[in-house]
Image 1: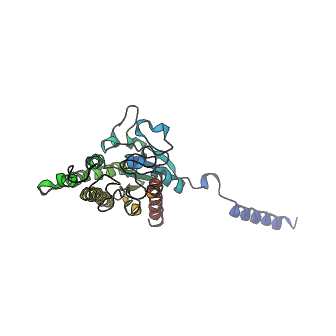
Image 2: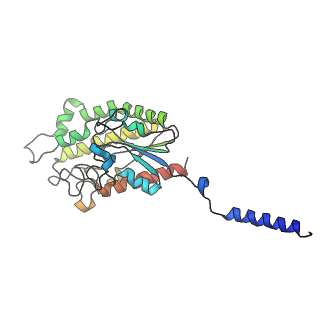
Image 3: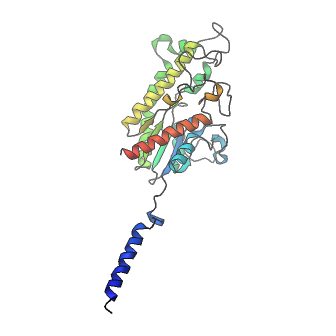
Length: 289
């Protein structure tokens, strides 16, 4: 009987030690981040294999930047990005039997990424209008056409659209008030002066076109900062990997793709680079709340 108390104390101490060293399980394990990807074809990566068969007419890839970022973060992804999407398609269905993109958001969402604006501002239709198969003077300069009269028509459209992005970010915040939001910018499509005839844009038009993309990126960065979102720059990481680069080095395909991807869109290598940049931005905000 004299040894009963010491033995009891020993058993309690031993149990406490085992409990302290036992691995965390069940409810104590960290749950994966809940990540929703919104946006247009820059996120959807159309024609980059493998295709997301659930994406239907959105031509979404399972190798787009949202998937790359989700895998790097160990996050649970809901990707509703859709080729040709505009701001209107965030709140209304883009295709029959497809939900509005906003419907993927919930109060439990942890991370939201979005790339939008290229279609709203007509930037990519403008890019195709800048194509000149024949050298000067056998054609028309889109840079000249868009700046006649002293006003840059494309940049003016971007400036007029920018408040719509602010409304989008406010809409995301209402639906997912605890989420960190990342606005992913568009990339580096053409180097200064272009590379005619490798890509069929005259020198001045190539410079003008990339300048228009840069202007959109600047607007996206500014509005993101005004609405508490993080802007992810993808132009810088694409330097040397634009459509003028050797095919094996490109992150963005040219007018005639050399690897599986839509014209003037990221290929698989580009999606990996952008996804890596997004994942790094998410980790950066985690370390610096």
